Length: 488
Image (cartoon, rainbow, N blue to C red; front, top):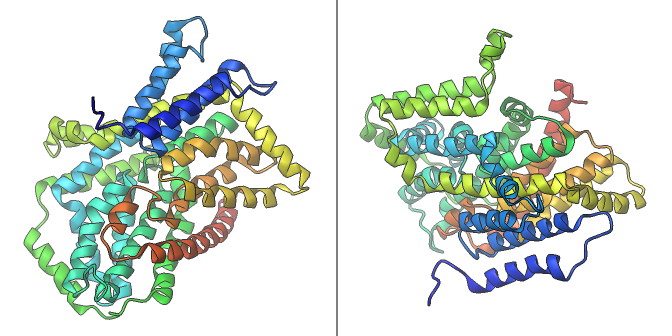
């Protein structure tokens, strides 16, 4: 019997890793046996996701099954154990991201996303650097309501990047790729990474960060908190990174007067804004206002306080009622259902690992090691962030990276004296920025790398350079901006 959807070797490795925590590796004295076994299930699930033993949703379902049937969270009470295993589905942030996926479908379906990108190219497209900034601004505008950086970078921006490159005679071949396409491809990817760090709803795994911050430190990070904290360093990075790549990896074509005309022709072909696009514009503005807490600024009455997930439901309801989206559109949005499923699984396991003391134990171990080095919390935080970022060479998923490491690294930093809000936010931003280093760092990477404009060696070389610049920009930007905000 063939198993076309299962990679047997990664599945066997994941199973062996899980069983090792049950029967071979004894738990430390301070860790309960069931907590240790839950850690085995968690790590086994991560290994299955990294090795792609199953599609990520399938691996998550197996993880939920193992937690429920093994009763590690509630020994002797099978009903409660199964309820624990399914508890992740009640997390409102998970549904916020899932609904944002549905809303992002409206941008693609109506063509509004492409229209926005072409508009910015029309305005900034006379020079190659201007094109890169125009497309970067389009990415920034779309990012708050498109939680799939793959859909945003690969589904909306990539076709426009490629169309512009080919219109300038730059194709994915050795003779012409360096004319324009290679530069635009690298910029598109790096900006996709930066915008993913700027909003909770800009990439699917970000709620894992906010969940980890709350579970470990009790600090709640709202959508507005994240967006405000990231705005200045993010905008600085958007301004600096294209310029750095333009200087270090310059395109052969510097002037592109035809690009503006190309964008004009595309916009002319699309015609004026249609009703469904106007509705999308209205929903976009409404969601930004609700997520930013505008109703609470109008009145302090609790009735004016709207939960971010409730706000997302409002936006989705408008799109469904108006017919911009149909129920069939939602059913076909596999990324949303997939995300809700694996988020529920990983958040559930991470939550119980924290409740059962595993995260505390691991954090204490790392904390002791760093303390023996005689470092203060600032120096220790720098080391933790650098390790956290560059260990991403071993990950092909931001989700797996955050799930496996965020809680532990955050817990260590806080234990060593780092302010929870500041350290948690910066580590959260780094959770997206780390993907810049490889051609498999996150979902949009294979799409853009697969276009063939940039060689693997170039991708890794400039990815490393960009990661260093990015971290410096974000560190300085956060330090200055957060001083103004009064965080320190």
